[in-house]
Length: 281
Ligand SMILES: C[S@@+](CC[C@H](N)C(=O)[O-])C[C@H]1O[C@@H](n2cnc3c(N)ncnc32)[C@H](O)[C@@H]1O
Image: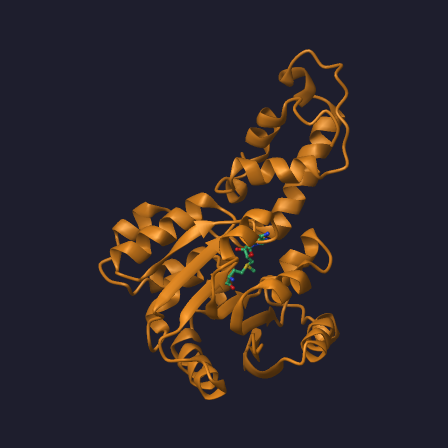
């Protein structure tokens, strides 16, 4: 977007008035506004005047749609530190319903996580593993279901508010590691992980939203993350759970693993397919 500074702050506030977008960081929303293909000419006297224009409505609706597809669509209700204050133990089952992905997965965690870890250990994952949960949503709140707590648990997603609440949860219940906001397709995230080594990275239901932002972004991220194992999952049904997503939609991913000579196994729950991948990195 040209003349990017005109009304940028005001536009961001207006866009974030939608409740499901309110936890997003201003800087991230600014990036999305900047990368949209609109041009604002300098012939508006005030933001109030601009706000009434067709152009402003188009920008707001287009940017909100993009942000909804990336983030807002999955949120039932924003998580806050107040939710964590009310918890008496690490059993945060009641909070899994705040995000659609954890809500859907909630009935299956007690059997899914032990089986997932058993298979990963059979494939060679060490017992005292370091876990990175990338584009984590509220999945770290399900840590109680991991049969053995990771030695360290790093979690990241887009919103600083969400990540502050997850970090607070980790600290309150002694989970080592931390949660921090990153756009995982950006250079700041590359700086964060360079020099680090994870044993396993979870990328649950994350690759489809990445592809919405930048085509082939997932392949670049998978190639560069320093981890011995990935657990990548895909939704088997569209949001709302009614329309099946055909296997052809993820054939690119299986081809990519084959090209990298990464061996994988799969594990399925009714709404989600998990790939357990050994990278040999
Ligand atoms: C379908 S949700 C899955 C959440 C979680 N992994 C789970 O399965 O419970 C997709 C998540 O990807 C996150 N996301 C999308 N683009 C991202 C980006 N560029 N950087 C970090 N997180 C991103 C969204 O904020 C959202 O929480």
